[in-house]
Every structure is written in structure tokens, then in C-alpha cells.
Image 1 (tube, rainbow, N blue to C red):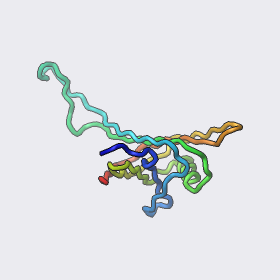
Image 2: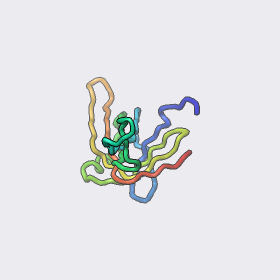
Image 3: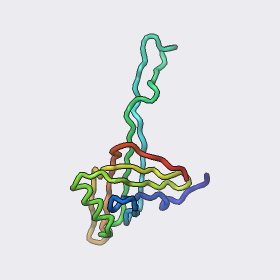
Image 4: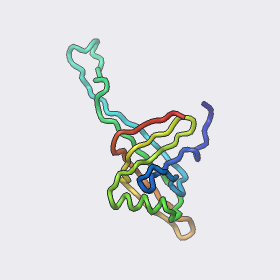
Length: 137
């Protein structure tokens, strides 16, 4: 796999609950992270005093963050409404030459900013709210 263009990392939201995803407008920078808590089962009997972890245990989670230019598009309105309603619709993250991650996320933060001689910007944060699926590209 060669170098990838950052603008091809897309965050999409299900706009109406019918499985039709639309790229969130105005994003300039996006990030997705995956985490898995470990469960330490080390005991006095652990070989050589090395830590032992319980396979398949622990909580898995994913987080999405992004920042961009406020466009007042339909996807801006959808993200804003999801935050205030506390809904957890499906989102897709398209990772170029890797795959598509899809599942329920909750919008956990939206920040708006601007200066008198610049564009209005926003940042948003999402947290996984259930099992995620992965489809390789």
C-alpha cells in the first residue's frame, strides 16, 4: 500500500435512517481511533513474572474526530440535531485502501469558532455506541 491522500478519509452519516450515507460537509481533517481495554490476569504463577492478558476480554471502542469549515449544509444540521437529541445513528468511516468501518456513533461534542477576518470552523467528536463492522476495500 502506497501513500494515501488525506482528503480520501471520509466520515459519512446516515441522513434519514434508510442506509443512505452522505459525507459530512466541510471537513478538512479527520481522525479515527480504535481501542481495546486489556484484562490483566497475571498471578504469582505467571511464567517468569510476565504479565498475562485474558484473550477476547475487555471493552472495545472507537472514536472519530474531525474539524473543518462550517458550511450550514444538511449534514451540519444533522450532526447538530444528533447532538441535541442524543441519537446514535449509523456512521461510516472510509479509510482509503483499507476499508469501511460502519456502526452506531453518538456525537459527543461540537465546537464552533471563527474570527472576524476568517472562516467559521467547527470540530466534532463521536464515540462508538455499539458493535462496528469492517468491510475491506
